[in-house]
Image (cartoon, rainbow, N blue to C red; front, side, top):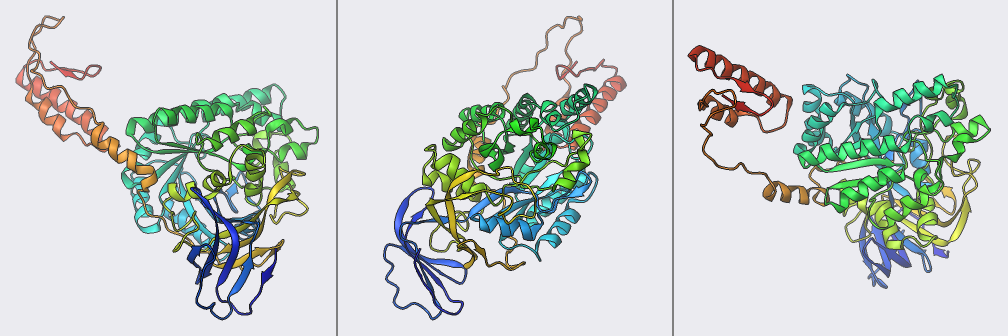
Length: 560
């Protein structure tokens, strides 16, 4: 790739490349200044390039929006240790692979303040990030305090997504009666509810069974949480969300079964998004049975990779055809000595794999190079759809005038071989080891600055910025609003029944029933349940005081 260089730190003109957005591709120039795309068009006729402007000749190359990794865990404290890719090493590796923004997870310990956890994570990230970032926040327990802090986090911290765990029993897991109010609060605040979908109860019992059978190696990890466990929880999460008309996002889709549940729900019109990750799209779980313990343990993550070797291709097909929507990595890396904490018990192996550097190339190789998707769909699933779901579009996820200058110059014909020996991550293992990928980032531009070029990084810790996100992303909530307006059930207006009951006692119309109905809180909160119980008691007491024989049938909702 030829280029003309200018000294100084002026603008950048990318000339002669093929600009690829999710909806179209065109031969065009891109002019960048002050971290923002100033103009896009064929053979831009700029009156005069400002001093210090650099010209990059991109003929024969693709000019793509920078990738957005929807799912990372940098320096996460987890299972008695901490992920080795911190916010510096992780984001450095991200830009080397063509990703210019990550969405990481704040995960408070059960019982801890969400706000305090957010502040702690931000203090870790701000001095280290080499590209832009934002946060999801996990809800690991439920209370009035959590509900209140969710509102503060949305309105004052710029977070519009909350993650709930259905796995990791007694650590992060919420029960169904906690998921329901959490989803209600997400909908009220205009945030998208995210779910780690696995049946935590069945995992615990399955792990006990495997250990009792003498299966203590990494294969036990997959055997105790088969894909049916993932599919069941996925269906349950979608069902709960649908009862509230709440949009839902299933993180790290790992199996055919779970993907089918999501695809079916989308075809039924439910507002649900599925996120396969680089690992589930690029490899499978057969390595859990590898004779080398370190190799097998290197693939341990939750939910696990599936041993069916057809799974990656199946998930890619669904991704290409919009049954699945976005891609992340669940990048959460642990070195061999950390994985060895579970050398005698697979339940103690820290869960997590790499992916933040290799996601773009793996998806191009398995998706575009294999003929399953075109370049525009590639942009959609690696960048644009994420920007739309999390209300970053068109600032991110698009090459257009006024958008952030987060750009990748991509060579679709070049190839590279993935290896832990050459990757830029801190971890000593790579689950894609030896994979040859066609499609390589030549230049990555973040915030209008060249941060990676021809295999060399030019990053500075702290150059990335936290990007706040507004709630109520239209891409997510427009159908929700419409359904709330036109699809609400209405009561049938009828006279009260005054005939005989099977018990032979006459019906007595009780006005307290009608008054009470009008006072029931409509926010699906725990307060609603408390009110109903108090009101039932009041009705019964009034009946006894007036000697009218008023009783309440809790199964039918009748007073008589």
